[in-house]
Image (cartoon, rainbow, N blue to C red):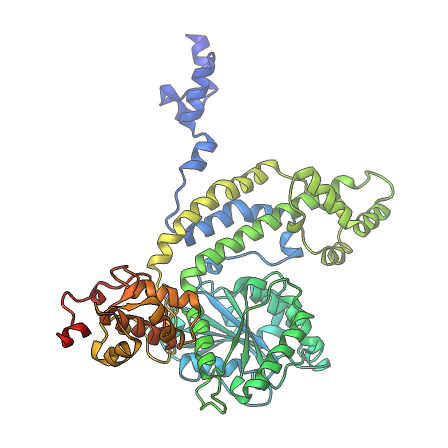
Length: 570
C-alpha cells in the first residue's frame, strides 16, 4: 500500500478523482489513450469551426498571425496590427486625385445630398480626410474622438499623431448608399512644397494606410488636368501593392468632343504608364459623375455604359468584401512568414564577438542576395519578399542581434492556417455572398430602365430589354417583301433568294448564320412567310443592339396554320 500512496502523491487531486485519467506507466497504447483524453493539440485544431467568415478571419489573425507579427517587429517595418473592426467594418472606397478632380462632387452625386461639412468649389476645398459613414443623424466626429471608438476601423490611425488627427473626421448621415459602403474623401493633391511641407503630416503614409484596408480605390482625373505632378506621383507609388483595387475615373468627359476625348484618353494613359508599372492596363471609367446637364452628348451611350459598370462595381462591393479581406489576410500572412525568416537569418549571420557593425552593413548592402539565400533554403517565392530598398532604409537603425529567432511552433501554426483553415473559410464565402445584400446605389437600381441597368447575371444594356423582342412578328408587315423575293410554288423562299435581302442589313455572316438557324424552324433550308418574318425580326433586334437568343423561345415557334402566298392563287 505504501508504494501506491507514494505514487499517488505525485499527482494533483483533480486527477485522482478520475481513475482512467492517471498517467499510465507501461504500454504505449495506454499513453496514447491518455494523450487523446487530455486533448491532443492537432485534434483540437481540426475540431474548430467558424460561425461565419468575419469571425473566422478575426480568430485566425489573433491566434495564428498576430503572434508571429509581434515577435518579429512586423508592425515597425510595415503596417500596424489589425483590429476586429478591420474585418467586420463595411467595405470602404478611397477617392484620391488632384484638387478639383470631382472627388467630393462624386460623393455628393452618390448620396444625392451634401454630407455634413462638405464644401465644393474649383479651388482646393477639402482640406481633411473625411470618412463618410452611415448614421441615424447628421454628425461630425473629430479625429481624436474617432480613433478611440473600437467599433470603427480607424483606431490604428492614432499612431500618426495630432497633426493628422486634427485633419481627420467622420461625417455621419442617413443614406441608403452608406448602409452598404463607407466613402473616404481625401484632400486634393497639391503641387510643390505646399504638399510636402505645409501639410504637417505624412500624406503618402496616410494614403498607404487607407489603401491597404479599403476595398476599392477610385483615382479621379479631370479631362483638363491630366498632368501628374511629382507629388501626385508619390501618392500613386504609395498605393503600390494594391493595384488590383485601383479603378481610374476620367471625369467631366462631357466637356470634350469625341475627337478631343480620344486624345485626352491617350494622354492620360501615357502619363499613367510612366507611374503605374504593370503589364495590365488599368480599368478606366469615362463619364461625367454629377447631376448637371451634359455639355456634349455625342458619347451619351458610352457614358451610360461606363457609369453602369462603375455603379454596379460599387453596388456589388458588400458581396465581394469577404473575398478581399481573406485575400489581404493571406497576403499579409505570406509577408509575415518571409519577414520572420529574414529576421532569423540576419540574426544568425551576426558574429558573436567582433565586427558586428561591419557585418550588419554588409548584410544590408547585399540584401537581395540574402533574399535569394532564404528563398532557396526555405522554399518561399522571391515575389513574397518586401521591397529591398525600403527594407535597407528601415534596417539601418536596427540592431540585428536583438532580432528574435524562429519559433517553430508559431510558424507551424501559421502554416496550418494557410494550408488548412484558410481553405475552409474560402468554402464558406460563396454561400455568404449569395445572401449578402447589395449597396443601394440610386443611379442604378435592381429594376432596370432605358437609362441604367445593374450589370449582374449577364445583364447589359444590350440584353436587359431583349425579352421585349421575344414576341411573334406580324407576318403582314413582311408579306410584300417576301413576295418580291420570289417564293416557289410551295410558298417557300430558298436560301439563294433570301440571302441578298438579309445581307442588306450589313450584319456579319456569322450573325446572319445564327439568325437563319433560329428562323428556319423546320430545317428544310427554305423560309416560309412566317420564318422569313422571324428572320427579319431578329435582324432588327440585332441592329437595335440586343443579343440574339441561344434558342428560339417557345412562344415564337411557327404557328400551326399559316396563310401561304400560294393559297391566294387557288
